[in-house]
Length: 204
Image (cartoon, rainbow, N blue to C red; front, side, top):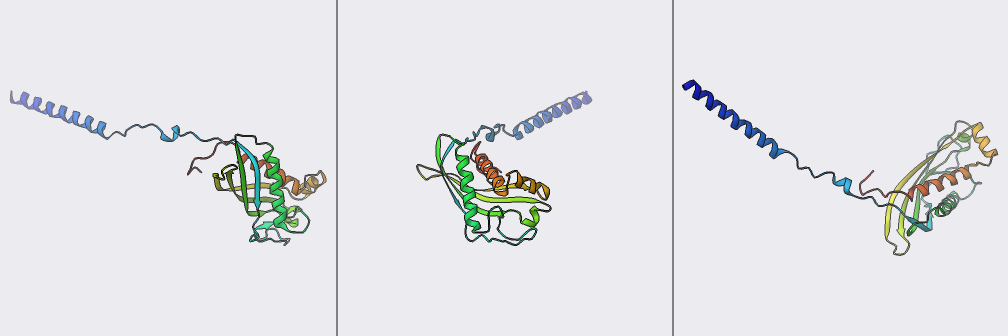
């Protein structure tokens, strides 16, 4: 009889312990709030560009050295020898003007561009191994009516392959000069940067 009572008491204890364990798991379970980020709607760009102001700071260093990779801010050989700052400003303005023709959105904006680095290729590089046009700038988009900043300033880095040797000579002969290729590339880059979804704050 004592044995039966002992077994009953033991079974009751285990049953209580089992309920306690289940209750503990339930209380400690994380509250399912869903994915808050999934409910945030990304704004979509819809711009009409009324003006683009391109600035190439005079503080950027220019190199005319014909090495493979001059350590400087500006390397550009697509125009005759001259004021490289002014030449690059003109290229950005031309590219932006072409790009603006493709943008007919709801918000009129002014785009400010400030060059950080424009590292093209020297003659020695272009007519031998080839390289890369490394172009870095900041972009700020303002409402053309209110002047309020809509985006930025944000950093944009764009790289364009620079064929070398016979390929470079062939491009020159067919009208695809450095200036033509770079201007076309910047036009495409600016259109891309001014269309599509605006990244959420903190997004990479």
